Image (cartoon, rainbow over all chains, first blue to last red; front, side, top):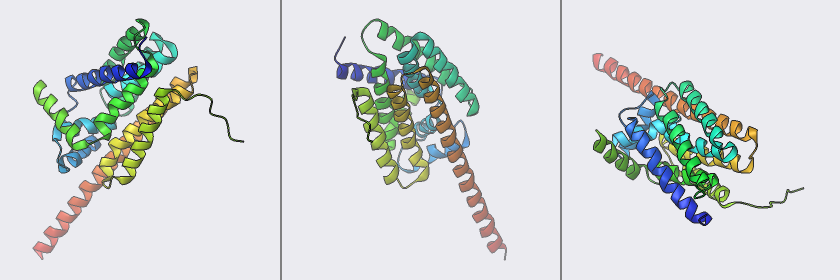
Length: 162
Length: 102
């Protein structure tokens, strides 16, 4: 087992790549899913950011997406192993339906994250608790440091995919 | 009586620091809509703390309920704010048109 700090750094990198990839593949930066998400995207654009990156920030705020799926899957695996992750995926799907979202990104994110986290925990590499801290750091980097630069980065990724 | 803090794990400490940092950013940010992503970080951090300090079968249900509930709240705040701004814009436009007609 690695030291706790090394585990958290690797967990941060894995969960960041995982949720950004799934969100961009699911087309979250394309448009605001609800009018609130579109308004957040426009507010971020006014502050000098990218409109598509802003839409993705808005969509993450307004509905449980792959980032929420990864966090809740980490919580589930931490408490109950593989079944906990699957229970978390069901909760994420219910949350998506409540927030009038189709729910593909969130549920797919939760299922993929459950497999990855459970696999790494079983291989004895990274403890699920480290994934909780890693995911909090990963969402902090996108949503909590600078909306301008984060939205530009996400906009670039979206143009690569489109 | 103040309960004694026995052990604070590193993941819980990271979540707590992230939560405090996002609180400060929420207070400092002027634009209401741009406060919401920081609020989202706070929600993530608090969900993590709930599971880390309450590792019981109900912990996962509490964490999911808290997370989904606060996402729904953010959704409602953002949608209401967007609709209100749109209505204000429309009213101002109508007022300007009325003045121009007179």
